[in-house]
Length: 480
Image (cartoon, rainbow, N blue to C red):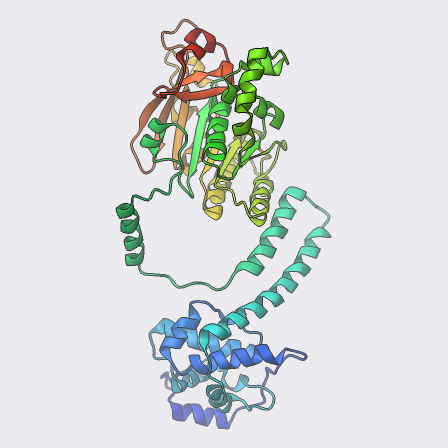
């Protein structure tokens, strides 16, 4: 600003340039002339055209430029655009002068200050083409810096593979993947996309394998955290596995099942029992009959054609799980669903109390769903208070450290089996999925058939369910 507090005019700028001191920022030794030429070409276009300025700002920041003088020019352009002022040579010079940086721009052999800006205009080129080259060189420089910081992480004395390997992966991926801030778009564009999806009948949600549940919650939707809570033996691991198996096998989509409670072999035994309709106890005890073998043989093809991946590493952190998700993406099979069995067995983050640790785990589960744009199914255990009541139907307050879990979750479904408490119940063999929280839909109760002896839960309305393979008495006491 001038002494009287007004924006300087072009004449003021010229006067300031006449008194300019030495140029403080010159070309870095050994810098590639090709990249500098792209920076000059882009800035030469940007400072002459509001349209070109708007185009460049959507994909670049000042940090993308290697030459500090070019960073100063682009920062001036951004300030003008943000203020709604026209971006043109005179206004850019005035903005630089107001910031006290006009005398600091220049390059060896090209002058400084206003003269340098004038020379930039002679190099004007295609914004999109040169923005790509500038971004590529920024990624190269940034990757080099990130690799140095990663080395510092590995040399730290408190090395934790789960935490620090995830930090390293994220730093490298952020350094190489970022291409600009992106422009905030008008919400009218999103409205058009949503209406188009409605018109075409497109549904972003994945089927759970249970039509009644899909109707109630709208399927498994990207970026959502769905919590299933239940007492031990009430079916929470089984419902998680059945949903994961449906998405990974029936839908053929990549699924990561983080099993902190059971081994992959135990889960596989349940998959075989469920698909072949062979008693789980026969498989676990290696007492398979000839009829069982025939059933398994007929199911072998489907069992083998699955995109389900199981990580049975015990006591893992979310850093470990995110590392697995990134590895799947790098291998060309990004996960479409994450199932975690279960919250209580996860490695707790450092916190002053167990409640704070659980709160942080719940937040990380939701953040993971948002970061990878996938639904996350998180299994959690209910406390014993439900068993002390005459009415055993679970409530949200029965979730251990329920406040933060409930707050982070988009959907909370609590499992209830009457025959778990009353063996002679007329509802033996049934399991209720009680939807206690549904951010984008109603609360409801969905009843399914619990076939623990086959290691599966199926819809009550399934047309292909053979009644001879299921009976309430067979399901009583079968735990998952």
